[in-house]
Length: 273
Image (cartoon, rainbow, N blue to C red; front, side):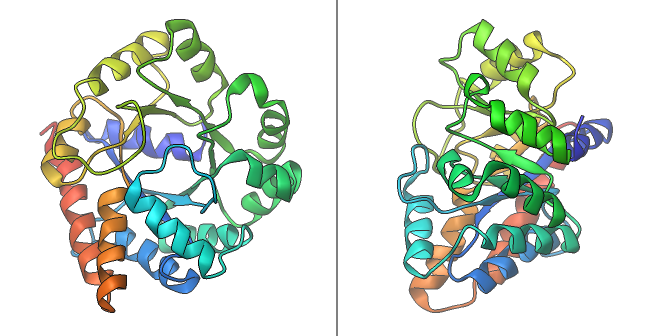
């Protein structure tokens, strides 16, 4: 099942969805990004993220929206390195949440697949979300994740065929990431009508594997809506926007992050009550 999958299953058992918070390592600096991750875990009132999706900045992202591109570009300019992901994973685990890493595959290959898996496991990381790696091209990662007991989360999309969804979910360990819209990420004023459809198709393929939904959630009401049918609600741009606003203004983002995290955490809890 995997450690991260257990988080989503436990949330389902508790009658709610899990809140998965995405933040990139290295923005506004490496140390400040670790503070930001701890802030979304703490929340404003002790109610925050269950799982933190740690983003590794990349020079040629395929699915990151404008806010995340903006933040990760600054992180690269300010000297973030791949090895910083392990420090972030350790920080998240110490703060009491489960750390997953969202990373483009070229960075893992450049580091060394086995070495990356080894170092992530040693840091307390639960596994990888690999947006540009498909299971049929993932032999090295399947072997390394088995060796070190790491979760592997692949993506499905509205354009995926039923057979592709089935094959992808068979290769996952932990949960599957359902992108609810076609195109890049980014906070939206309305959630996608395609989201419940892709979740339903995933459940038909494998009702036992938890499904996390990303792309578009920006507030507590939307989080509650998505939590009505998904096992995990993934929020990125809405949190990253708090960091960008503070970085531009030269102010501290931690208060805004804690407040937004609590709003989202409350949202995923009220949907099924």
